[in-house]
Length: 115
Length: 116
Image (cartoon, rainbow over all chains, first blue to last red):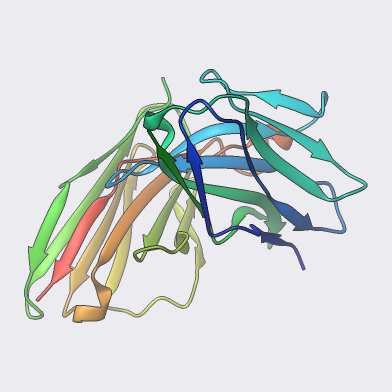
């Protein structure tokens, strides 16, 4: 069965410091991976995705993630964070089951950026 | 444009009330989803509609009744809810299954539901 593990429930970091949010998955089939961000009192926004091709994917606001098949990981990184990056981050894997696509989410990582 | 809209933003209802949540997308997507999210938890899938037909019901209680009037609209009818049903209800849409590996879900801002 496919599953997603986000190893850190909370990550505190100072502004302008680098950050890595960890995500590991388990899957025996083709993998499609996503990072979503949820700002306080808002819905989920797609941050970036890996569907195929280059294993390094980037978002427009400076985040990047690398698909590592051998380590079954899809960690999210940013070289310098801002206060505005404070949010909940969810890693997800897409599962094709019963003829339909479903997202399997990790438990989430709360990124808290301090001044 | 990857916008999914939801109304209302907030809803407070009693256990005997009947209310509805609305979701709309104009991206031509053929799959639409309802999720329930409790505080500090990931979203939990409730229903999936594909080409306006209910495809997945994740064993949701009958007090939640989904409806897909057309390919752009998705409703969630609520009746006789319990206080533990209080949560953020998220709608999402995607191109739909069978479109290769590009199927990606886009979420709305959610409706914050409080059941008294």
